[in-house]
Image 1: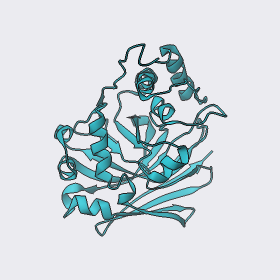
Image 2: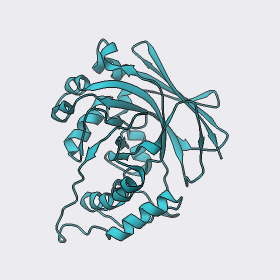
Image 3: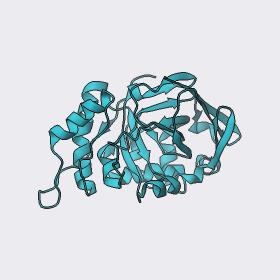
Length: 279
């Protein structure tokens, strides 16, 4: 995959009265430890201002080690996953090129701590005009394609830590790896808005279907995820930026020896992403 560059601006400037941003060294050391395969400490963030500030420090180390972000992950966009974690709103975080692998890969779980898998969906930005989008139609007009994606978030917190919304924000939704398949051009869809809402996804484990979902699973419509991201104002989306829209189905522990497949039907066209997990 060619390098894609995404400019990101995280809002983290709040007064000491309003928030207590975790110590910069704590979050930077957490990032270094995470890269080395260690678990993540609880920075005790209690609100989103603190969490965004914490993530800015954490992300700075990831950028130094993995290069500029290539896109954005938006997680917790389905009600089922929000309920499981007791979280009321989506969470966003930067994606980096080393996290993304091609379909058919053998993914080693070495270095992960508590990885899970889920059927996801990626869209590619075609124009910075997307930042002015107010409707699903305007979002679709600023995209180039949609791609199948199996994401592997790593819920890498210290044992006993209970995930909260601010904690997930502080670590950007804990992305770890993701497998991208070949996509479908938005221009090839007769009605992108309707087609994306009606698309179906089947998640398979070792050949057996374990979950089936539809596009409306993501905040009511996949493109509403993009509208939410734009409204938050934390990221400047540009041509080439990719956006992971969240989990359609799955969120089960990732175990070595498993073969995972996500099959998509979009307006009568098929897409697929597959991965085999190894030690």
